[in-house]
Image (cartoon, rainbow, N blue to C red; front, side):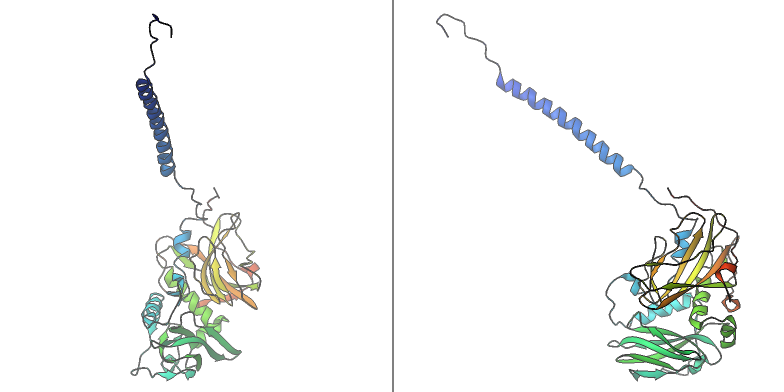
Length: 341
């Protein structure tokens, strides 16, 4: 700068910095509002929900489960626990079973052992094996006219075995156990044999009638038997009979397979048995669960249910069941089918 020149005016850096900071603040504020508004809108946006194939699918299907899957369905490691007896007995009461008259305390036997059910003479029901605190039940075998039927213990502390009359039950495991008889009113050996179905299947279909009481559904008297071969991963239940429109409701009793997989059935986690809901629809294919078949061939005994006004009769009609070919299975009037979104 030459002498005598007036000094040049310097910019005010503090003022510029304050102004710049203010602008940044404003931009941040606007950006924050925009982001917050976006997040709020995202939070308020309704989740995409696939509609049920028909109204009441979930409530109907989730009412069904295998009789001794109470603790198994929790998905945690199952260890021997005497409290399991109360869980299973509560399940049996809710399915229509009643304790058979007892002549005193049930004797405890070291396993393996054979048990009998004199209290079930003339009736059908379950011989419920209950282990003590350190017992692990593994399986039971029942001699029938056609051979020997085996039942795996899904819970190591309690094992319900279906029988008709005073059948001898051989039980495997470690520890000791006692046997308690539970009968199903109205089901006798003669009634069950007239259906042409295994006692376990008739009992399970009787249970389903009780479990679905109050859901405006009434069972029909026909049963079709579907076969599912063993395979890797979940296998589709091969039902071909379907309605000309809408959906029909069926209940399936699975023997020889299990672990139903489907959006509408609860996780049962029982590998060799199952009591599931099925929806046969004109267009939707997501209402029939897949099952696992560890070996051999699984059989699925499907029984249609029809819609009724109000509450269906509380009387159990499983004793009137008869087997028909799937092609001849009578289907009820269909329910309205909800389209996929």
